[in-house]
Length: 320
Image (cartoon, rainbow, N blue to C red):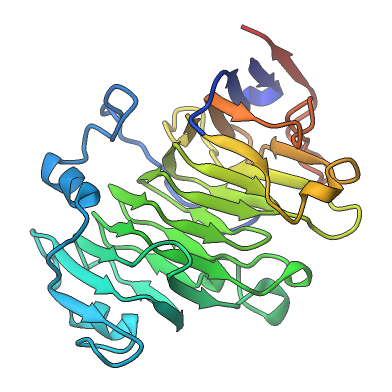
């Protein structure tokens, strides 16, 4: 199916057998270079880095352990100790545990790798939110700006809850960043791919309103994308892409993913309307292809932006 809107907002859906907002402006991804390679990893993701994701164990430069058995007891101290502008990988192993802290990786921290013990085993948790005075941008539990970041087997969460409005679990401004077997969980605005080129593979992402939103050039492959139960009469919207310029190459591409309801929504599917997304900005672009879309998602697929003077005045969906 192909969705087109007035003012060049565009998005498409390809149905097939699957393998299982608000915020600050950004420049998105303006590179015209090849992004993906035969539906697998991005062409820019090097072979050595791919092996790093696939091996069972990794050789770590430092270890973070909440129980005191590592080099550091909190993640931010390990980040601050990492070399600046590194041209080689610096690997931080984060042992299983709940890390209640806010992590901000500066632009000068290049090529960091964080490896945990798995989703729901290594958890980075925070609860900053818009209702308590944080901007959407600054509400992130985990934020990364340094180029070439890789995360594997980690859960990023924002536990602010349903009533607290925008509350980001993960924000990325890292060019050429990769998130592998990571969970990003929250409610409104869980994942903020803010700018530049990003890749999410075998991740689990859940939320309620605009829970994948931003300006980046982001590809999601083999992910579970799950709508949660929201407030009464609230509509779930999975994506809210922020592409603002016609000649900008940014957008979201969702391929080989499972888009359905999280466990808390299953009993309310008939009373909660969930949509694939809505156009946040004038040239919003989201592509969903070769993915499984469950009946938890409304058949019309997409929702208008609900502000006065909306740039979306009509939508046409065509099966192909």
